[in-house]
View 1: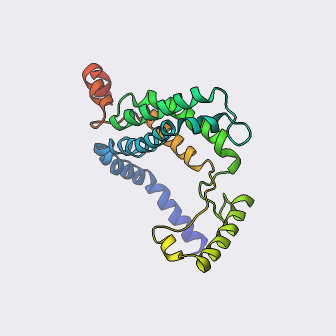
View 2 (view 1 turned 90 degrees about the horizontal axis):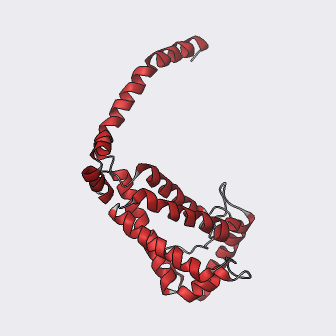
View 3 (view 1 turned 135 degrees about the vertical axis):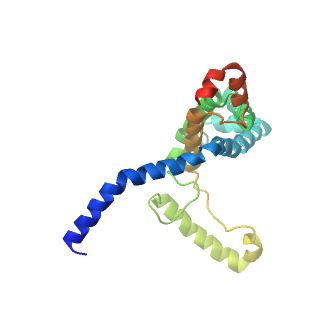
Length: 219
């Protein structure tokens, strides 16, 4: 294609661009009737995550508090027993509220704070990746070294263990424990803070429809 043909093609594309954008906008707008699915799925994804996190902390309360408070092998946080209680409580209450779509926007605030504190205090020093990887833009000397050790572990298990049985339900990996999951949950919670619980399948929607009908009418 010579320069003249390319220029003519670009002129046609630029001329048609407003119409293409309008068509795209109208096509996307037709999906607004199911826009409640986005916040619903975010809530249903996050609810079990926080439920399991909170109930596990209460089930192992003393051990978790020791890890929170110990500066040598733990997080070195102040008032660890109080913090564990508050974090676990917010996680469990948050899970229930997210499941029901009740007070969705307010409950995301303490949960986002928990995610930030967890990311900074427990995960940041490990980098981004939750699972160690030997390549990619987020790979580090730490994760590359972990993969080298993983390969060695596989060799040992293949020789001395029932490797097929060990891996029949999933491949062996090394946990890197980076900020990936905490950051992902934070972004999902941030989206819910702005979106709210969504229409039709949240308590927030029906309460607002009953007590704040002018707001639901505008939405």
